[in-house]
Every structure is written in structure tokens, then in C-alpha cells.
Length: 148
Image 1 (tube, rainbow, N blue to C red):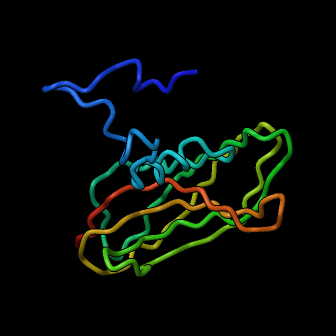
Image 2 (cartoon, rainbow, N blue to C red):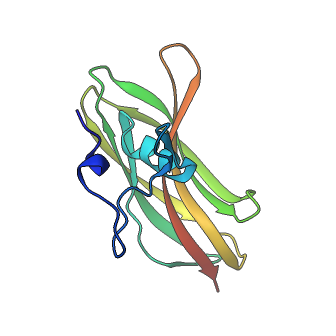
Image 3 (spheres, rainbow, N blue to C red):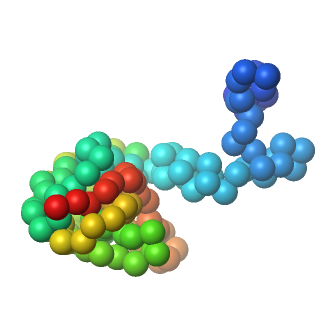
């Protein structure tokens, strides 16, 4: 099977092969690998929130949808995290999740937005134990600004 980019080309007005850092050695760009590893993980997480801003000091209702492509049920911890540019968490809220085999679940969370201004990364992170006992994380991310 051919990688889809090899069936197209990059030209002066269109770039289709820019997800590789090194095409000869098939090394993917780290940002592309990071985002695509979440997009194609067997446990899918989708943060259904597309607003550009959050109001500091208020509680925001957030919906997180999950899908399990494995034929076994899975469970773990679902966290919503507001992370600053410095990588530090400004706020977080966690709940237990359980998704049936080849199933889906929707979680609604009341997320308390802290009274801090700035640009943040809002993340829904599902963490579960892998078959060999190591933790596995999959996430959905949105860039947001917090204002008053």
C-alpha cells in the first residue's frame, strides 16, 4: 500500500508532503506524529468545544465524547486540563470513564475556569492502562484565551 502523499506532489502552490521531516528515511515531523497518534488511537477522545475564549471565574460545561475501537471494554481516568504556555496546569478536573467494547460514551463536565488571563491549551486527556501495564494517554486539544 502506498502512503497517500506519494500519490500526490508538492508544487509551487500546494504542499502535500510537509508532514515528513525526512522523506528519504520516512521520518515524520514530530508535531504531525503527535497529533496523528491521537487521531488514530484505538481509544478516541473528542473535546466538543470550539469557542475561542473562556470566561475566567465561571464554570464552563464541557462535553467529551469517547469511542473504543477495541473488542474489549476499557476504563481509566478522563481529565480536562487548562495548561499555560509554560506547561503548567492552571486548572484540571478528573472523572472515571468506562467505554464498552466497540462502544462509545459521552461525558459532561462542569469545568471551573480559573480567574487568570492569558492564552491556554484546553485538553481532554484519557489515561488507561495498556495490556502490558504501562499508562497510555490519548487527548483532544483546543487553543483558548481566558478573559474576564
